[in-house]
Length: 91
Image (cartoon, rainbow, N blue to C red):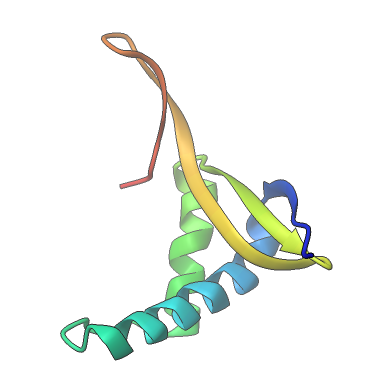
């Protein structure tokens, strides 16, 4: 049985996050050939993910198995005075 450890992720996890995203996109494009993989550039994706942590003050939670990142979710806390506090995905 595989057990995941959940912990907060940061800029230090960006390379592993980019690898997961590219791997998933490649799998999806096999099933859905209309997906455009033109942006599957590791440096480009790492820059986008780093900007999430720096510019939008995003926070994330990662799932780790044997200290290897196997999944993640990233978003930011936003105070919405009409709806209350919410966890949103960065735009």
